[in-house]
Length: 408
Image (tube, rainbow, N blue to C red; front, side):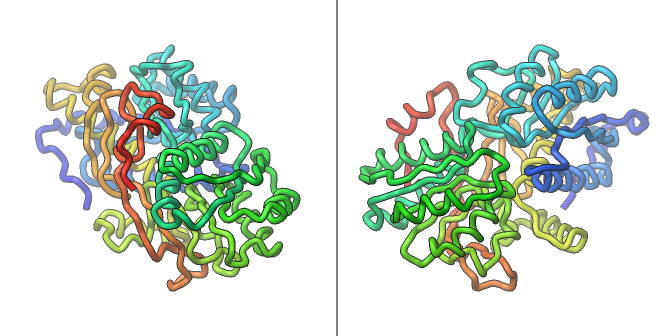
């Protein structure tokens, strides 16, 4: 599975490591997300080093914790100025990424985000990034979940409700859902909108409000530790009596915690760029999932894929720039080489656009209990490349939804 090393890379370079800084959360409500991402990074690095490194140099990781924007930016500065890393990767929170992106540009620090994307992107602070590469330009999972709801259920719902985290990601997801319903002439009435603060773990009043509203469909972009709690609470309250449809485009972050006993069949469930149980998975994905299960007694979600993708994009950029120069490339050479590069990630093919936005393969579908696990998996599966879900370079997201030829 591992790529063969380039024989032309001089062996003498191997004693000079490529230093990659990682900034990821290890605790709190997003701790499990960062942990899974780190495991994807480690898997990538083990395979890269076993097959000769990046352009003949072994990769050395320096890992720092992602917390609030201020402290995370200080760790970026440390990695770049003190540890002299060649590249920084990571970040889960959109709040951190919005602040850090602008600082990285000022510092001329090569930074490849795992996540931390919002619909408004970073246009306010960084319209045309040179040093920063982002994982996507809008929440592709919200677009895909919306399209699947229309594809499967158009004509079967007329009232909707939302429960979404009260920050840019949640607000943008709900707005995108409504914009797509409007585009496809699905006339609905919004009967309830619940906005729990990130980290709220008592969702009883939110569930009660949803139940009282009696919506035909509930849309939710909950994705952290609050999601399994919501599902349990909603199940206990009778919200999952079979009459209500559910669209959860980012549920895959918590997939192994969404047990069959309180997670219904037939809900739209998003796995973003990695579905661990995909029947058509590549040998690379099968190997990763098997090793992950053996080592951690768990199954990976998409942050592992995002982290793996970031490392492979960087490797491909360095090696393409090396071959072009026939010498170790500088940062500017690497950045130019990353633009347009194509790689195979854990979840399938991906590439980095010239505007520093990634395109990747996405997975969503309808849940089933017909599996060997104690949690819900996908029975009906849809797979889409993000070019169908993401606005093209230089366009406004909301204008794109209005005018684009978007296929169901």
